[in-house]
Every structure is written in structure tokens, then in C-alpha cells.
Length: 367
Image (cartoon, rainbow, N blue to C red; front, side, top):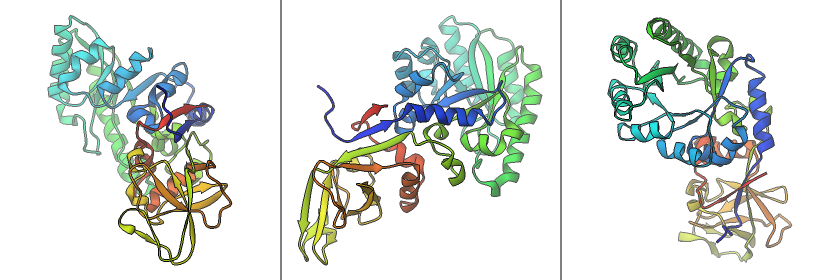
């Protein structure tokens, strides 16, 4: 049975390649790129993106084990970093040849035990240090304990050492970011000479590549939202191509006479005759109820059509009084990056949340 939901998310692979190259052009030729494809590739399709990028990047990263399983099942052979492994998953991670981020002594001991029980040697692990985001990671003072555990065993080998910047897109936080980078350099300089093999280093995310490539490029960078055409900065986003558009069609057009209402709880009341179009996409597809009552808008025949009344589970109604349109016409729910960024601003959130909210019942179409 096919997926006949007419609403579809279109993924433009040429745009993704353009965006990858736009970021590569800011880096030294020897710097490796890790493509972040967690959360279904930021709401697109992790498998399609990974298949396409497999020969073009050095690493992939996912958040959780099951995301790594999906890529391995799809035949992806490239190294995959699992950013948030749990103790309970470590054996499975090793069996699938996924590489865990080790962020605490507990997880470090557990991964050595898991490798032992599977009779595996020299298994690649990645050591994460917290330099100020205060989310996951070791602190500098844990280095002696890390070394004590890593030194006298053959089970695991430290493939990379990394950290994550808290505010790479905010130049008002430049002093804090430079402090994070320096802390990371100090940690690396202290740890690495005492390890039996030399790990590679990585710290920068999309905005980090834009703002700190000179200071913290190291051996690899981690490119996430940038691949999909967003750079957390209008001028930078303008240099990228739109990789994601969310499309639907008009199911029905209704004339609402003055005094009549539209939608649940009669949230919209017509002060004059209004023409509305009903579109098969709703909050179960990832269009937040925050966009109801004129906050959000779609494009129909190149014109903005504001959402009327409350967003329903499977539908929205939009005002098309001034738009020449018919049932069956195409509707752009997310036209391009500027549209997504504007919607995010109106809902007091960020583009990441809008993209990753697009539910799995919306079919993905690769172009």
C-alpha cells in the first residue's frame, strides 16, 4: 500500500550538495566533514541524505542507537558517531559498528566491559568534554580517571576528542566561545600526549564553521542544519540553497458569509464574506497549533494565505479571499528558508523545531 497522503516534503539533493560545498569552501582541504543526520535528517530523510552524502563526507552523526540502526540497515558503511548512547545500548552499538560518544566515567567503564564481553579489541570511541554547554561531557578534572581507565586495556581506542559550543551563532557571546575553544585546547593538549594513539579533534557546528573556522577548525567539523540550507544568519542563509519544501493541495474552497465561524471552538468569525481553502495538513503532521488564527501563513499561487481559526489535527483552513485559486491547486506550507525562519519567529521558536516536527506520516520525496 502506497502513501497517498498528498502532502509531501520535497528534498532537493542538488541543494544539499551545494550547501555541503559552500561550507567546505570555508575549510582547509584536509579538514574532514561529519554530516549530522539525527532526527530523520532534521526532519528530511536521514537514509536518503546519508546515501547521497556517503562518498562526500568522512562521518555521520546520529543522536540515538535506533537512528544508527536505520542507516546501517540501509547499507551505509561510513563511520557513524552516536551522540547520546545509553549504557544499555553499548553492546548493540558495537555489534553494528557504530561509534559511541563517551561522556562520563560510567559510560566509559561500560563500553570497556561491553567490548570485553564481545571479545572486541581497539573499538573506536569518542570522548566528549563539556566546555560550557553543561549538557553532556567530561570535565577537565576527570582526565586522570579517563587515562587510568583507557591506558591499560586493549578493548577500546580513543578515535576522537570533541566538544560543543554553546552559542556559536551569537557574536555577543564571542568572549565566552573563545574561552570554550581555549578550554578545549588545554584539555586536548593535556590528554592527547598521554594516549597510546593520536585521536582527531572536532568542535565546530554549522554556525561555528561560519564564525570560528580560523580559531577552532581542528581535524573535523560537524555540519547539521547548514546542510539543509539554514545558517542562523540571514546573510549566510542567503548563500545557501533551499533543500526542503513542504507542499500540499487545496481540498475544498468554502465561502463564509458574514457572521459565520470557521474551525474548532468557532475561533474565527467572519466580519465580511470570506473565501477559505481547506488543506490536508495539521498538527499531527507537525504544523503547530501556535500557527492558528493568523499567526502562520502558506503560499498559494505566489500569494500569502493566512491560517484561519485553529489548526486541526489533519487540516488547516486559510484565507484565500484575494487569491485566484481552485481546488487541487498546489499549496506551499514551507516555501523556502525565509518562509520557515519567518514562521519560526512568529511562533517564538527556531527553524530546527519546525523542520524536525514534520511527522513521519508526511511522505518524503527526493528530487
